[in-house]
Length: 55
Image 1 (cartoon, rainbow, N blue to C red):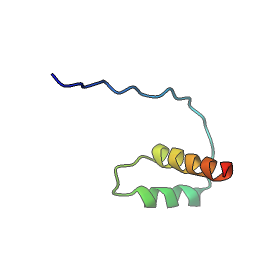
Image 2: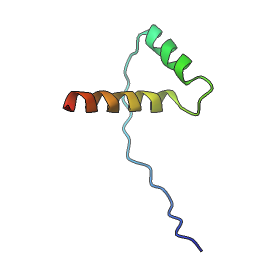
Image 3: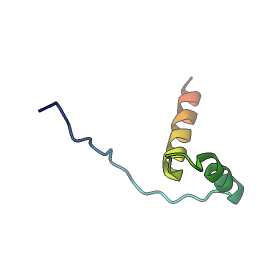
Image 4: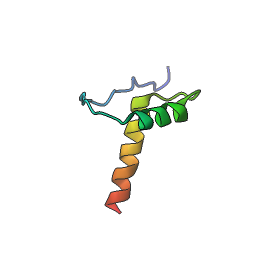
């Protein structure tokens, strides 16, 4: 057999935040037809913003 390893899911915590309706609409339009969830998009955007402010 190969060296298959079962991937681990990183720990997560639910947070409730409010988005302006126009931002929700823009995100939903951006991910439409792509293999991406709203949460995954927001997480990637926040990580990108955090990297930018570290520089």
